[in-house]
Length: 364
Image (tube, rainbow, N blue to C red; front, side):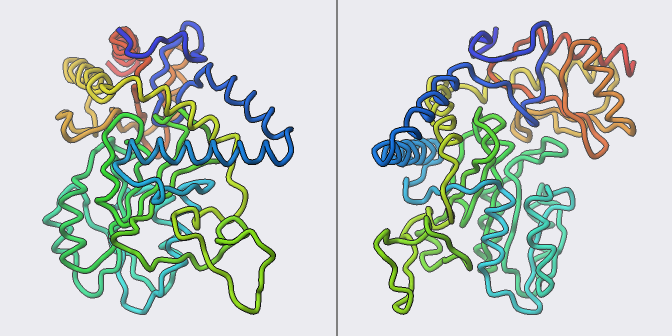
């Protein structure tokens, strides 16, 4: 049975929606969130106060889910923006090293790749011993996704934390492929980010930025805007500007209030389902078993302790395969030479059977 009521979502009729790793179906309750935002936006200064109050409510909900303090939570437009702000804030020197997985996502890698003073070095993050061996020279940062977008592999963040500590390096984590179904222990990282439009059931335009103030109390971004400055009084530019004391210094201009109304609505909904990980991994293991029986190889580890909510298969014509699956009633996600099948609480074993049958017909 589905964990969520499928009627709560705008699920396309007659299709198996197994592409949560790309985009989840939208909650119908967000209609009310949009309407509240529209009313508050139209209500002058009092309405803006209510918008800011909803932002603070979203911060508190994220903090509760991430084992963090609300002051450690800020918001950016995307993971790429947050990662770029972090990278631009550091005083890079020739010889500095950043370690990433060879298949890490672009939002994590691209901001580092353009910092020409830093050496971008690759190590398989699934193998902590190999990462430790790669830590030679002046390692400044280990940057990693909690779960790989490409293979669905889950990484051992606690082991990577120990390696980072041994070398005085930052651990930076992208939780996008984990937040919303896996437990998030944000304090393992120095900084962390997550998009909100996947398992968190939010929308694009708002992403979470986590700053571990206990580990990195002196951190400051290299750029700022009116929202990231502490005082709303008339500024005395000659005296200098003071940044907000918490993670809202990540938020340079108006946050996406509409996106935050939706995020708070989504987090309220998700809070009613403490066993999402068990549900989705029941479906991933069932799919793995059916793929193995059909002789279809997966690049995702079969052990649920080593993967998230996705199962991936490599295919040289992934786009055509994804289109063919859609013609057979299955909405999957393709890209970079693989097709990814991702489950959420609105999926059930019927979706697994539908998908497995379609794959047997296409690849068997």
